[in-house]
Amino acid sequence: MKYAINKDVLAKACKTARISNKAAIKICRKINRLKFQKAVSIINDLVSKKISLEGKYFTSAAKSIQNLLKELEANAKQKNIDLNSTILFISSHKGPTLMRSRRKRKFGIYIKSTNLQAVLKKHEGMKKEKVQENEGKKDSTR
Image (cartoon, rainbow, N blue to C red; front, side, top):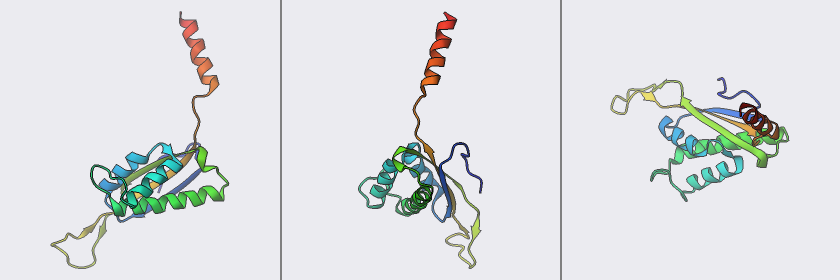
């Protein structure tokens, strides 16, 4: 599976999980572009049912995303990356279509699955060079 973000990536992890794509999208939108430690604390609160999203806990999806974040953290530690200065980019997409091997017409024959991918990037604010360039452009236009 190709990653959605490939430029300036410090660590990455992906997973195909048998969870609802709708629930995964809601959780990913909540924690996307947050600092890694803040995102992990939100997921831990969702799993322990301290906070909810739109009145729901999305327990199975939150547990799968929690496992993905643990894998990502292990990959970052292997590369000696400081997790306090990183931002998490996470996304979910519709996974492969799986079919049940037995007759279950009442419950449906297709099994839901979701592709999850998470990427860590370095947290950088606006650089001084860019600010100086923008100021120079403003002065030259006057």
